[in-house]
Image (cartoon, rainbow, N blue to C red):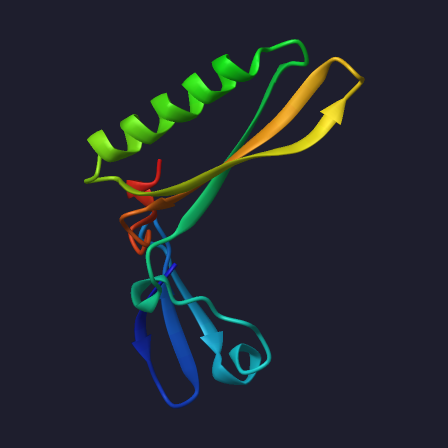
Length: 113
């Protein structure tokens, strides 16, 4: 939601479908509020699994392809990223996680979708 108006007793929020919600400030004072507009670029992660028998060379090749993709699409992604092994599943899969940073902060959530 986006803050549309702040008054002495209430704050008016605008939902994505343009519905207005009125909240008493006394309620909002007890709730955590995120402010994407003032936030830095957002981080994200993506989990995936590979076969346990995958050779290290192929994993290295995958990491290099990810790096090149992030560098090539710098309008969407920062080049700093990390690919790590999270766990071994059922003794036959390696669960990995890619951590990456967007070049936006999603104050307009539709940009993320």
